[in-house]
Picture (spheres, rainbow, N blue to C red):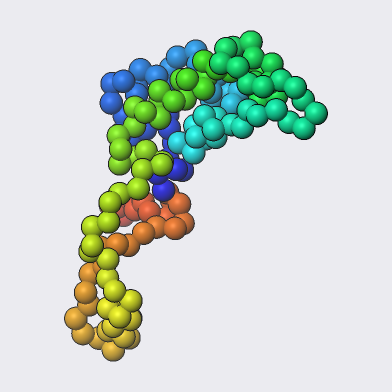
Length: 154
């Protein structure tokens, strides 16, 4: 879920992250690099920049780099590929640990055993006491995890 959350005006936005939402580079990230989620930022940061077969240009850490990745970025309208990558890193580092796409929480040892999950399935069919599973995960994306409760229309 955290990979598919919109990165702009992110729900864990703090002052440092909000300041990065409307800069020249963030506009370039949105328009030229097509960044809209945290996963898109990772794609920009981790874009392979090793020379392709038959090409001699290796990546260099400046905006006029002639490697294929930077050239590709410039062809998409980016004037400063390195600065955009640096900005993407800043935006990602401004996310709190919980919302960083590469962070995995430490095990909490609350996950139900396979046996207990099986018993819960039986209880659902037959009735009885059901043990809550705190390790429920959502595999259907953001839309499957959010619920909106509103008063019915009159």
